[in-house]
View 1 (cartoon, rainbow, N blue to C red):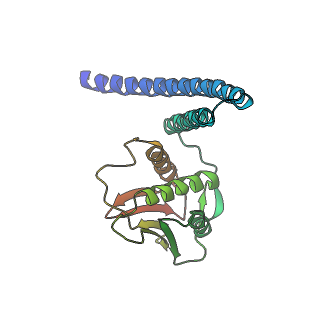
View 2 (view 1 turned 30 degrees about the horizontal axis):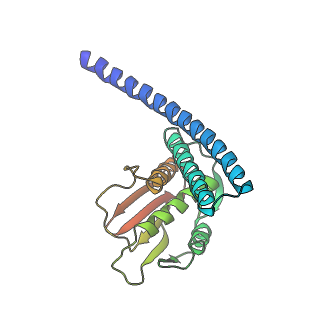
View 3 (view 1 turned 90 degrees about the vertical axis):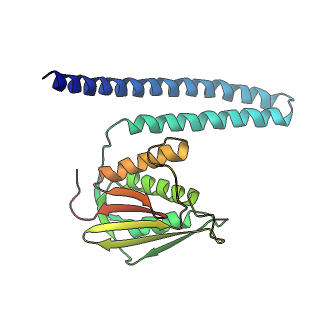
Length: 222
């Protein structure tokens, strides 16, 4: 009985710690927004005065950094909350993937899409799942293999056994779990993407030079 009570107390303590952490992060975000307000006011003063261009550039970088930090804190707060989905039928996975593929500008990394079906539909939260897949695309580009001279990331979509399987291949092997490290903005967004996909009843894996997302196409797992 004592051991059971101890585990219960530990669980309650962790829940209390989680709630407190979310509140602390939320307060930090508010403080950053306050600093951004003062920095924006300072930039306007500098722009109206005859100050060197490098000072304007510096204050611009400061504001951009505050923006990124506030966005990361917002994402951390969302990670600590339960995902609330607003699902609708008729979500066209193939179309969304093609649009995301075309959104990456031609550069040192080429993103190539392939699908064995013109239409792969499911019941999903359109905005949340689209944002999650966008984060997966960004992660795949970041983790691309540097051994390939063309530096190509291939994306495929297949429908099998009432599941949609999305696979990004051509990635380099990683020595850490990017879904849990929280080592930077990309990793935070990737963790959020994983949480959204799992809320849809799906799964994510990263192994053997591939990032794989599986999503159910039949009844939504809640």
